[in-house]
Image 1 (cartoon, rainbow, N blue to C red):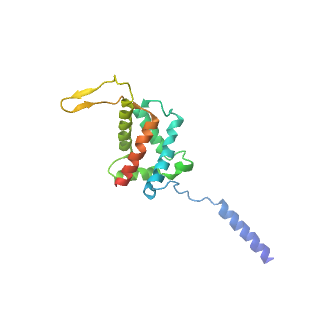
Image 2: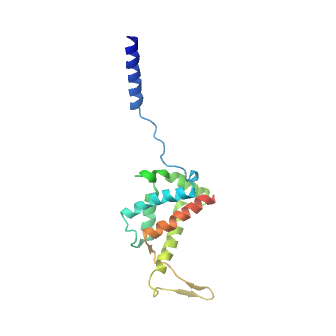
Image 3: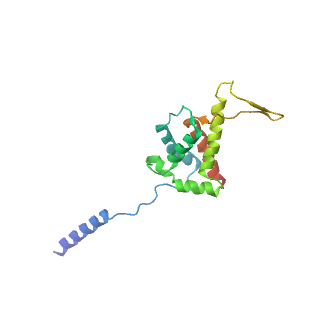
Length: 162
């Protein structure tokens, strides 16, 4: 009889433990804990979400791309490799480096804009300064693919600069 009571108690305990809600910990990893190759892979996995709403090779306004990139880097809806980077930890890394993720994305988008502008026909506007040579200004548009290609190494460099 005591053996049956023990088995019933054990089954009840195991069932209770299985049904007890557990504290959910953040799935993301601190970018500090990742090597550059892993961080690059995970950033690309996060940022490729923008391709769902933006054709990778069509040009979009920089502000629209920045908003899409910030949304993609956020943790909402992350799955698979996207769960590897925690947005709050990424922001903390940028803050430790004396900047923000927004500022890093602004730099990346400015570079992507310049690259996109250089791919425009040669009849675009060129400003000539005395003794400073010519400077080309972007048109405020670039592609999501170019944006990601510029953002990922900048984020990694900034993360490593702390």
